[in-house]
Length: 178
Image (cartoon, rainbow, N blue to C red):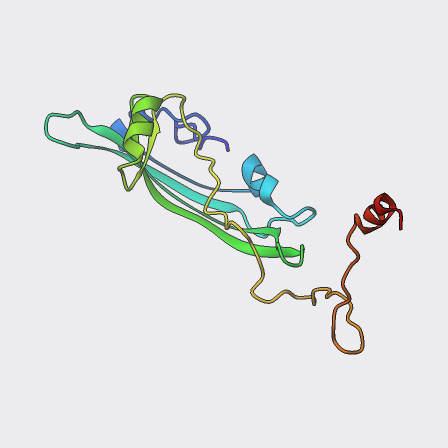
């Protein structure tokens, strides 16, 4: 990701507090190859059909009375990524999208403690975050109906699938002296 020529913010190492204090925003449309983590999820040999579109907007929000304002970031991103169908092992296009708020706190310990009780994601200000993220990847990506029929085990004339021999049956016979 390259920073916009007209915008001084670097989305690869964003100073979140300064970004939020200025009420800044960023947006871009970038080729998928700029996002290493997403490329790693892509079906081998399949080109990405579209660029990744994203926008980020930051603001300072007050929390509980007597607490200082905290930086918040709203990230919206979207791309259709060809991933591997776990049923037929062919490519299946999956819409990946994010529309989330992130709240930033001083350190990792605070983020870990507060994240459990928060609806939003709580992250530490340091190390400076990159806007690249894995977006809503399905646990088991699959076609609703695979384009090619799946191979089934061969059945005999009666429709019964023959039982496969146990891999250690021969060893057991040798042990018994059969």
